[in-house]
Figure 1 (cartoon, rainbow, N blue to C red):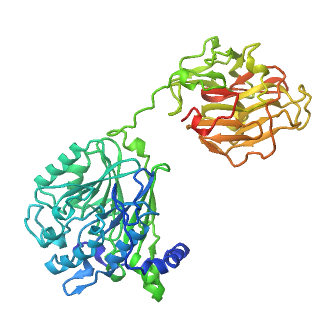
Figure 2 (figure 1 turned 90 degrees about the vertical axis):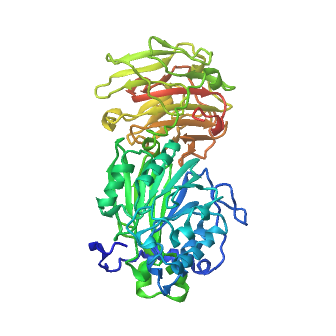
Figure 3 (figure 1 turned 60 degrees about the vertical axis):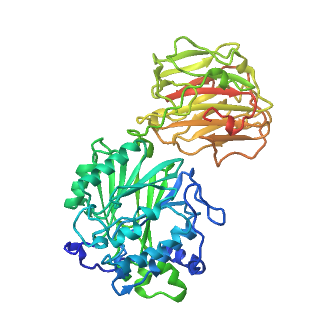
Length: 608
């Protein structure tokens, strides 16, 4: 707590969390009252039930507990709220994939032996399971403005390095014992919590810098007691900590502190030009001294976000007895300062110190799975004829429209076998561009794929893609019309097969099976611009499924579909024909394309 800060004045209680909080509370009525709940262990150590967090799941949770000092104040000691929060973490450790807990200091009000002993006993709930957590000294825990060189204290006796020795996540401590670091595995990699005393000495700064230097590829969450003082503002000491440590260490992407209230956030650009998110979380000014309220940082590495939520397990546990008005407001905080999402492109953010190595190109023979009928990749500009690397003779000629041309780029889907793509510059009204067409007599031209097929392509649309000029361009397709094949169901001028992009950038596979008069259509969802995508159309001889990035789309027809009708005319890459004439040219990049005369499993797609 900061007794001199203006934010010390109590605020009116915030609005309750509404329906979500009610549902959370009612769902936990029975479970929250259970006194002995198994806690999932971190890393390799399992609970007695054998359960543990998944270290490779790309969704995991870091739990944070700020200032609990008013619960441990002289003769006024109540450890029940802290124990309720710890039990909540035990109970939800598995389904929330909780990998670590950080306390932000001011565990106690006066730092006396009795106060420290009481909260120390509460934390034995975690010690019994050898679970990873960190604590740090706040100003009230040591009752001193001196630095981490202050020497012995009841806090250090209870929460010094000896307490964590042998814990799987414990990395080490500074010689004085007041600073620690902890390393745990989550999302398939190692992460660090660097827990720093509320006042670092020169020795403390040197120790912290050395820890970071010894773990150069590890993302770091820095925890300390004082740093952010309010929205977009750092305290004087917080500015010092930024200038002397955080700013020049790109690994530190998130900081968490308490001390002041109400909760707030700041963002600063570090020396590497990257954002660092600095969060203040403290609830001691709220009902029951904050009741050991916890904040959950839910990392989602696929969505590139951290979803933050603030809950009060102690209040949740009391719901069965009936809550008073204040308690109902405290179940879950839903204000902008307490429930929000942090957008972080983790790969890009960590690229400066731990870049993800690019997937190397894969040799052509590895891509020629049994049944490969055609395989084209574009690792150099297209000039004249593009060879079919399958050896089946399905070579491609470049066809220009109104003087258009084909470009080339080294850009490619990160999981594409070949490292390069053709840049199509199609435009309609008037029609202009260039596309590729199989040569006369190519075996592909007359293939009907009665036993099934797999057609794959990688593509990327640019920022200037415009539906009014670029919609319904084909990625891969066959010329020849339904009318020419004697199939007059639906529009007889539509081509026999086309994998195209709609005006909403939805991939569409539209074709005439051998056993149908009309067109069978598979629809995918809208695909954003400036993003590489992999498409696969798979027919097993009976049904056709369209996949986007290896995921089946929702609109896959159930009707039986056998083969592809053909009248012996060429296939196109980057072009779409209507009524037997080229009608649209792709505006975007096209990577590797492969056609196989059998159904492939997802694990055999080119992006695997």
